[in-house]
Amino acid sequence: MSIDQFKYSRIPPEAEALRAEVRAFLAEALKDYPAVRRADSWMGFDAEFSRRLGAKGWVGMALPKRHGGGEASPFARYVVIEELLAAGAPVSAHWFADRQSGPQILHYGTDAQKERHLPAICRGEQFFCIGMSEPNSGSDLASIKTRARREGDKWVVNGQKVWTTNAHRSHYMIALVRTGENSKRQEGLSQFIVDLSLPGITIRPIKDLTGAEHFNEVFFDELVLDADALIGTEGQGWGQVTAELAFERSGPERFLSSIALLQTLIDAVGRSPDALQAKEIGRFAARLVTLRNMSLAVTAQLAAGNNPAWEASVVKDLGAVFEQEIPEVAQLLCELPPTVQGGSDHAQVLAYLTQMAPSFSLRGGTREILRGIIARGLGLR
Image (cartoon, rainbow, N blue to C red; front, top):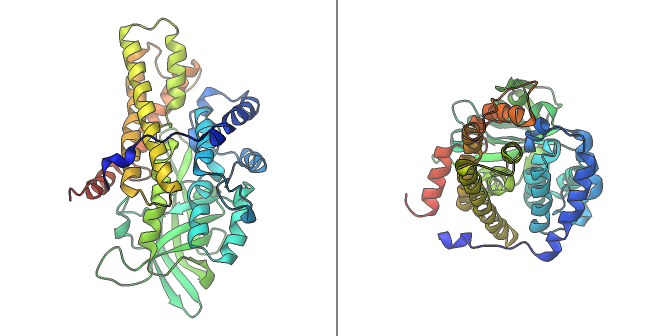
């Protein structure tokens, strides 16, 4: 691998042609949507909106038609996702199923698993969460302790997941757990599709600084799963989950989480910015274009069937830095103080994203873990 793999990738015309239709739909659907709710970006939850997108064919759109998808190219999906995020659409309900769980089931699932889950995902009706992080583990997935043991034709699961986004609102979780004993930490791991309505599961929401509940603790206490809950091959979970993380870490959501604030900042500054305002907004624009090109390069690799794990980590790491800097710099460029209520759109969005931004370098992989992956990808360790 080399840094040349980040060569510029252009969106094909047939994919780009979708953009006008998506923008027109969003202009109508979100015409009364307040700026502070748009700041939720891909964390905004609206099940009905997800069903509307499913009816348009914009959920699971890259999945095969026989499973309810549209067999669209990764670039067509990129256009739709980019427009949804730029508009601050509430896509969180279907987000993980569309981005990760659907492709994971398509690549590793049995025919029965595909028939059960993929059509409902494409309709925007079945929601997934991702069971990776654990207490005292975080982004070091090889250290997880949640365990599944065989009992006849069943699996019995005990352990805990944490920081599980939308677990309290989801129907299923794809969980990474230990199923074997091995000397190497990455061995003996497997993935399961967990029905979150089963007995033996306790879900406890965790409030963030804004008072919202996105994250959760999830406890498994003698949870019994049927044999067909296993996805992929027993003991091969590490390879499966690292391939999945390339989807999680490379998309435009990894640098557009603060885009609503950049938009309100430009509106607040107006058409006559001073020298510092012009410089910093221009700097943000240049970095945004660069991150987008890097993300598109990873999309091209995914479209080619490659596993760009370290390149995706670069996008995630640099994207989180960008997202976190926008609230910091925005406070210096405009005299409007942040406020959680009663202020201008810009003041409310600034207050909200100032509180949310610290989590951007934690979710989806901490900065330290990502930089270790990048170092290995570049042959530096």
